[in-house]
Length: 314
Image (tube, rainbow, N blue to C red; front, side):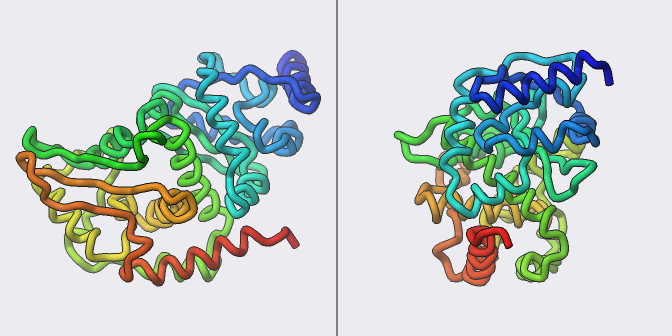
C-alpha cells in the first residue's frame, strides 16, 4: 500500500475523531466487492473504534476502489439517525460487531454483508442507496414480487408503513436491522439458542417449501417461479411459522427476516402486510405473525436472544 493511501486513511480517521464530517462515497458493486473491502488491513482497528454514527462509509486508506460516486446527503443523514436511534439490543450489536456501513451502487440487492477477514466477529454492512430511496410500501412490493413471474392480472400490495412514515428513513431502518440479523447469525455461529430457533422451521418436509423462494433472482441467475404458484406459497406461509415470504428462502434468511420484522412490528409498532390480488380481487393477505400462535415459539426464543444483547458485555 502506498504512503499516499495510508496518509489519506489516517487523515480521515483523524477528522472523524475530531468531529468533522467525512465525505461519504458509494462503491460500484460487483460480486467480489464485499470480500475485497473486508480484506485484512492494519487500519481496521482504528476504523472499528469510530463512534457508531460515524461508521458510514470507509476512510480512503482502507480501499483502492476507483469507481466511486458521492452518496446522497439525505441518505447519509437518514442512515446516521437510524444508527443513533437503534434500541439497546440492536445498538449493542451494531457497536460491537459492525465496523462500517458501506453504500454501494448498481447492486441487484438492497443490502448484503461481509465479515472482516482478520476478525470474523466484526463485519461490514453494504446498502444500496438507490433502492433505499423507494417508499417502503413500494419497496416491499418490489422485493416480494421478485421471486415470481406475475401475470398482468396478478399484483402485490405491500404495507410496511403508515402514510406519515412511508419515507426512506423507515425503509433504511428495516433493511439495516435485517442485515444486523445476519451479523448476529454469523457471530453466534453454532450457538444452541440460534440452532434451536432454526430447528423450529427447518428442514421443511412439504414439497412446495423444498423448492425455496429466491429473492432478487437476478443476483443468482435463478429463474422466477410461475406467477400462479404465488398463492400456494402464500397459503403455506400463512399457516406455518414464517414471518414473511423472504423467510422461506433458507434458514439464514429466516433468522434475519425474523429479526427485522420483530424490530419493525413489535418494537416499532409498524405494519407488515402483503396482499396478493388476482384480477383485482384479494386472494390472500399476509401479515407479520408475531401476535399469532403460529409464531409463539419463535418469538419466545428470539426475545431470549435479544435480552442477551441488552446485557452489558462481560
